[in-house]
View 1 (cartoon, rainbow over the protein chains, first blue to last red):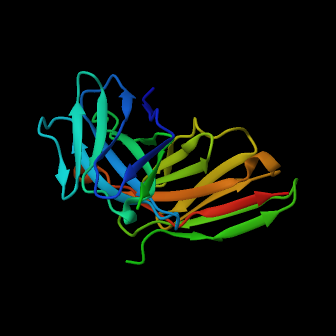
View 2: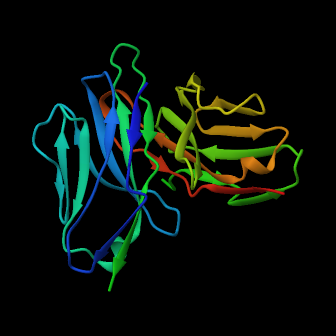
Length: 118
Length: 116
């Protein structure tokens, strides 16, 4: 079974600095998708960035970028120029792409709470 | 589209009572997921449906939990009887499949359940 592990329950970063959130996963599949979601205090889940496993190039969305290491099964999120609005819970997610059964399971890690210090 | 709609937003019930949580997915999405969020375990996948059919319910904690999806626009998660340890935020999410399998999961606002 697939698992997603976030080993950092909480992280802090100074405003305008850079922070990296860690995520590792375990799977026997070769085709899958990885995501980072942000959950602010409002509870709303917001997609931050996604990565297709077949792509070697790391995804980037403005100040957010990932370091995808497929062999190591690692998928970290880097936030540059941190802003107060980045303070939230961040979840790493894995979506399987079982082309045999055609079913796609979505599982999440336990989350990392990011604090941004002014 | 209004997004994924969950009801109620908050539910307080007494131990032993039946609780029903409701979800309306985004029109056209053929995947629906139910999650439970707690501080200790994060977002746990309870069950998910594809085209209204339950695919994997291995995350359902015990027989007190059941979920149904009678049609493409409605799903319920029922807890009977409820216990204090069921207190959590329950999320429903929907997503496309097939060529859209790389797409994000869209979440509802969640239902905060408190069992006293």
